[in-house]
Image (tube, rainbow, N blue to C red; front, side, top):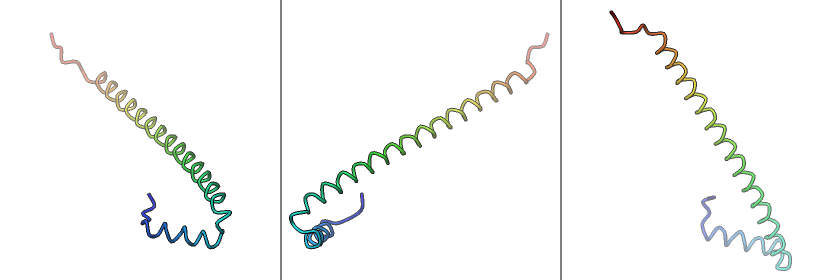
Length: 82
């Protein structure tokens, strides 16, 4: 997802261990995990809303085209001649 290698993750964990300390590291990791989960849930909600709006726009466009085709069909003179 972020294109981070295992070595980069390891380096981040070592730096976090040095900066935060071994006692607070699990607490901070849990806090960061919760925030990442909230961000992910909100992102999926936004993505779902955008997809719904795109579907609605596509349906409206299809309806408009169908109505134009129907109107065009009604405007044509009939082929019946007696």
